[in-house]
Length: 357
Ligand code: NAD
Image 1 (cartoon, rainbow, N blue to C red):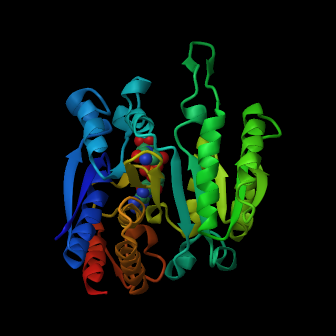
Image 2 (image 1 turned 120 degrees about the vertical axis):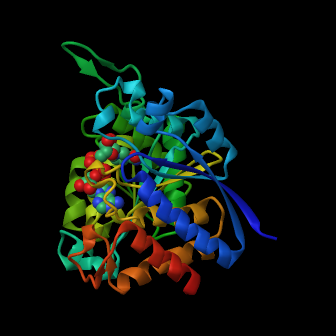
């Protein structure tokens, strides 16, 4: 009998619908190979949700996500909604959803595809073989801290972490390291911020339960520099919300395009899977967005939420094969392209290989 998986689908704004459609195409191809029955429930979030309902995160979306086994998400945001009050902006919908679902651990793996080694702005010898994971705390820190205020002459935010919040993300980081190269580099700003000194102390405490894992600490400014100087030195980078946001975008360029990297946000019962990039309004509707990050996010969903390791591997192998054969979207077209493809063409090739491999 087919295994049933309920997937909440949030396409979002900008290129969101284009890239999520391709991930669904690939999942459907996989379903026939593995006898999966994916049941999709499309929900609104972001600017489009605000336009229709007046709320970037309607209650129906929260309820639909809570009923699902996992959430597949594209991206949200765009200039049209930039001047709305903060709580009406698309981003606040996503922040609220992460918080509602307790998605405190954000996995952002960075891996370099051999076929695209030249696509990185860094030298080949620097990026070859890079395989690191940014483990970002996602529901605390300065993005959520109270008090916060924007006044006429002054504005402020608060960076706050409780012991419980640091313990749980640190455990996630150490557990991930145990499945990898057993090295954790905790990134903070402990030379200036009390909240970072606290973070460091708690991470040290959690480390005691993982004697096999080597723990090091690095200030975030140095980490930003080390990531482009010698990214191979890192295995798991464990860090807070804002530092992780910035470092993971920086790390994405190691791989050559922001359109390649997936992410998983977990912690609560239902995980959320999304590309690390935004809604790319500059290229929306042109059929040129790279759907690989979203398709790779669907693979992470299969692995993390459904425990379907071999199906996840199959998608990742299909992506690699498509790149090996020289099919490229425009963002990576300068590197070994045999054929420049549209968003839907790349999705179709990957779906085809998923069925064939
Ligand atoms: P962005 O990631 O959307 O785009 C940055 C650059 O990368 C653009 O030149 C874009 O064309 C390119 N790019 C991004 N994804 C691509 C893909 N799949 N294929 C090819 N090229 C791609 O970042 P931005 O321009 O700073 O933000 C645009 C909007 O997205 C803003 O409203 C922002 O708030 C929002 N945003 C949303 C999320 C999210 O939904 N999780 C994350 C970041 C930014």
